[in-house]
Length: 156
Image (cartoon, rainbow, N blue to C red; front, side, top):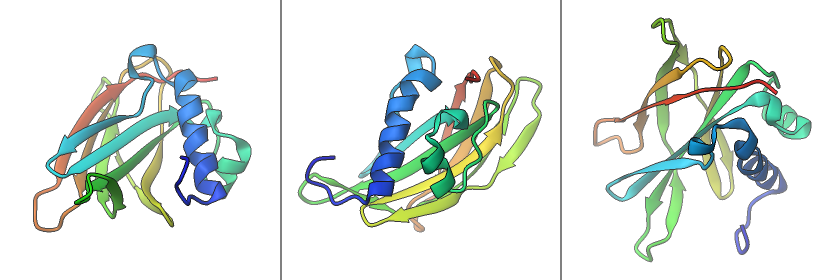
């Protein structure tokens, strides 16, 4: 994050998420992932909220639990100088287990001077594949982008 002007709370959230992803996700999905859609990058990651630092969880109103997960989505737009800048996005979707039981997700926006995140939490069953179906709208003139993936979660 050298050279950026991020607030201490954003840095703590970012470093907490990155550092803890190594422990929260299976080896094949440890890194945050992104999808390129034209000039936009949709970055997303998931983790168990029990891995968040207590001060970070408190600052963002997230309950720490070994059976609660969190999704973090951010959208970046390519600039003329080839850098990427965070942009507003609206994220909706659901999370489901193998039996097809699904729950709608309620994302909320976290805005910082140099970052915009859409986050939500959800309950999961340990070691069960969990399916996510998200719609990410980053441009009001085009249809939302469908983003689907499956993760397994493990408590602390």
